[in-house]
Length: 115
Image (tube, rainbow, N blue to C red):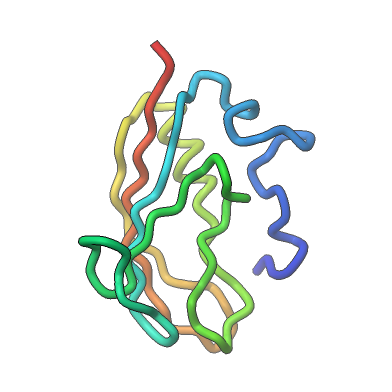
């Protein structure tokens, strides 16, 4: 499991930003619904535990809300696979790999490609 500074620049290639690392992508974000300890009311119309993570400001990790957890979920493999397949959207569930953490995430990744 990756924790702390191991997560820094997870999907950034040689210090590049997300958009520099994937030059055919115009923008990207993940709609995250987290269930478990430490979750908060959703943002806007999102349900409890809901938030939106912009890839332009992300290091590839969706942080876990559990205050006892030092991890989070690493979604770069899903994003990379989507790019390879030319997919615009993908929904997937994933459990937090953090030690003694049972939080669960439902994630919808949305990518917009350059024309």
